[in-house]
Structure formats: C-alpha cells, structure tokens
Image (tube, rainbow, N blue to C red):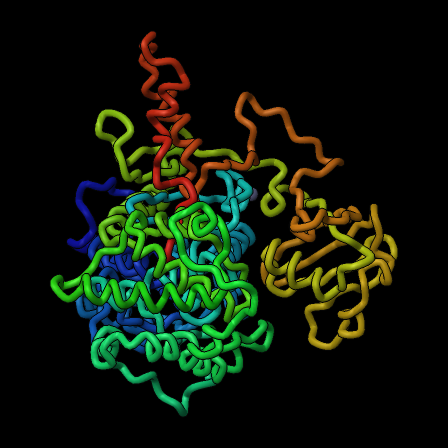
Length: 609
Ligand SMILES: [Zn+2]
C-alpha cells in the first residue's frame, strides 16, 4: 500500500520507491526547512537531517519550521520536531553537527538513495560533492540569492560535479563574519548599512550589529557571560538622545572590547583594536581636511578624524529627519546616508586593520547588497523535490539544471531549464579519472604550514590531507597530529619541493587523491601569493564540440548558496529563442538577456545559514 501522501500524479515506479527511500538533507536553513516540509508532505518517510547551526531570531522570517521559542536551539533538532508535528509517522533523524566531521565518512553517505544539499557556504558544498562522488550517490545541489536561484543534479559519471567549473571568489558572508570577524572592506560596509537601519531604518533582526555570541567558532568563550543585554539598538539610541559620543563609544569601543573576550576568534586572526571618540577625533596631526562636495571627498580615503566628524554630523541630521517619520530608508544616492555608511565602514575597517575605501567605492558596493528571500527559497526547494522524484525513477537525463531568474528574459519565463545535463569537465581536479592541478607557489618563501592551510585546505578544500613528495618518498604533511610537525615552519624548498616537483596529496576522509605539479612563482605586488590551475600540461584538454568546459564565467555571481551561471543560461536561452529576427543582432539579444545594469553584477549576498 502506497501512503496517500505520495503524489498520485507520479509514475507507479516512483510512488513505490518514495516511502522507503533514504534521504539525507544537508542544512536546515532557508532552503532546508522548505525541502524538509516538501519531503514530509510528499510521502518520504526516512529522512536524516544534519546542520551545525542554532536558530537565530533573524531566521524566523523565512525558516518556517522555527518559532520564537526555538531561538538558540539546534536547527536540525527543532526541524525534526516540527516535521514530526506535521507527520508523526515518518522516521527522521537529526544531527546537530558539521557534515565535514570525520564521523560522516563515505560509508555514512552510502546509506542514502539521494543527498539533498541546502547549504550556505562553498566549503561544505565542495565537501559533500566529493563525498557523494566517492560514495557514488546522487546529489541535488541548490542555492538562492535574492530573487535568483538554481538547482543542479550531480551524479558521478553522468553529470558535471560541483567543482567541474571554476568559481569566482565567494561574495557571500555569514552573519557572524559581519558581526564578529570582518576581514574585507565589504564586510564593514554591510555592517555599516545594518547600523544605519538599526539606528534609523525599519526594524530588521537580520541586521543586528552587536557581537554575535552564537558564533560556533567562539563556542565556549562566553558560556558564563550569557548573552548581551537585549535592548534594541534603536531604543538605546533614543534613550541617549542619539548622543554621538555615546553611540561612537558603544559601537567602536565597547562592542569591540566585548568581541575581544571571545578569545577563540583571535587565535588565528589579528585582534581588533577598539577606538574611542576621543582617540578618533585626536587621530592624525596633518592639516585637517573637511568634507566638501568636490572630487577629493569622493575619491580619497577619509582619515579617521574626518570619519568621526562625519559620524557626528550625519547622526545629528538623520536624527532630525527621523523626528517626523517612522523610519528612514537608506539610499545610496542620499548623501547623508552614504556619508554615514562611509564613515562607519571605514572606522570599523580601521579597527580590524582592513583597507579603508573611498566614498565612491563604498557607494558602488553598498548599492548591491541583497537579502535572502523566503519565496525564492520555497520555489527552489519545490524544484529540488521534483528533481528528487526523477532521480529516484532513474531518469537522469531529465535532471537538467534549472535556473530561477529575477526577471523573465523572454516569453515570461523565470524558471529556465538547461537543455541537457552538462557532461563532466575532463580536467576537473575533483571528478577526473586522475585529478591533477598545477600550483604556482613561491617555493623559497611559502612554508609547509601555509601550503597546507592556504593551498590544500582553503583553496583545494581538503579537510585532512596527507602529502608526500613523489619519487623522493618524503613525507611532507600528515593528517595524524604531531607526525610532521617539524616540517610546519620549513620553506617548501627546504624539503626538496622545487619547480617541477610532483606532490601526491590524499584526503582519506574525502576518499580523494590529487596530484599537484609545483611551479615556482613569484607574485607581483598586490597580486595573490599563489595560483592554482586545474589545466595540466600533461593532460591535454579533450576536444569538445563547441563549448569549452571549465571556462570561468566572469558574469557568474556568487549566491547566498551557490552560483547562478548567467552566461550559460543566457546562451541556452538565446539558442532556444533564436527567432532569426533580422532586427535583433546577437549582441542586442545578448544584451536583452543579460541586462547591462543588472544587479547580478557584483552582487553581495548575505548568507542564509
Ligand atoms: Zn568535476
């Protein structure tokens, strides 16, 4: 007997599989909650869910399995309880844990019929991709960014893997990066915009600017301290009558002092340096600049005393504006709001030793920040489960990637499928028969530890690599603690790793072997210290008809969860809608498909954990 929840429109062969199919959902955030609800309501009865995070107030506007009373609790556990309240008959197992932990090895993955990714960061995505390839289990990858989204099916030997296409640098940030550990100017700009909204804008708990005590990285540091006093920033600012000195000292001194108490955060980072109003206004002895309307105020980086002064004057103006309105709306074209964000972003950058930016730069970055949207998540999660039906039926050819677009490009289509499942990139350094990369590093300057952390872990996304120098039998890096500690501070060349050396890297957990060709490389000033190139000299790219696999799509934008490959989609659509209209040359059509002023360029996404 097939349970009545199983949709009757599906083929019998699929309907029979659904009640017993074993499903792993990785992530119980924006997309994960929706996916779980869809699974439970379509008759799936054997689900496991894993998520490391706890529930934050800011999740409640779109992660509908969670309620106010759940704040601070495990997402995976609460999601399980909520799902059981819909349907007590399903077997659902929750893990409040990281999917990258050693406990979830290849055998763990092998137990499932299909894995559904609902993640918010690339490192975890890459890892699950590798685990599913190693276990040969189908994976459905999904992501959203604002009004855009994408679903991609991944199966070893059938489709591309998640890492077949090189990805542009990640442009999305979890909340704790913004609130606790900024490392780039954009993190400070996002924070400053949030501060504007907290002080003058519409109330949005998503945009908290105070230290985030739930940061998993800071775990344990503040257990005895409890959470920060929960008065809203706005209420407090009103109580002190928007006194610029008090505001300044809270945001740039006291809150930073508080962050410093989370010692775990600063073990591998430079700790921030709090700055008080008195210190900031006394900064610098040169001839004092004042804010003007000319180019220099636009293009120059303001000194800290000027930031402090602008902070004070803009607060007074914004307070006055607020007096006859309920709230203000930040607009990049409003000078006062932009000056406020420029000043605050730069003061915060100064505190965290991050490069400061001109008002011009900040305007362009701040104008492009978009939030996570519940309806987008719901649409993408619906598609994930529809594709899961096809995967369970074995209809892999029907599992093309689907893109959700903010604007319909043609004929009112906002959900555009690919025309075929993309074949794997033969040079992919993850799913190729013999994965190979060329690494361009300065062998005289880079230490073994730097190579392990920056190249193997952060860039090539290994978790616990073992590395030997090929042909020499030198054990360079061991995943066993202490075994190769003596090598850590040695330069690569001191271990005999020179131009032309071959390293064999092996990650036991990921069941992943990679050959790394070393090229000595001295980076130019202000350029990245090393490069990785997936195309090897030895493995010639195979001749594909027409489209080159593995090309970097410059236009692809980072999503809160993954890329939407605009160009590929646009090309497909162009092909699809090619009506040979002589009025419309290719370039015109391209422009139509990729609107020039589209917000997809340089989007900055807030992660949706
Ligand atoms: Zn691949």
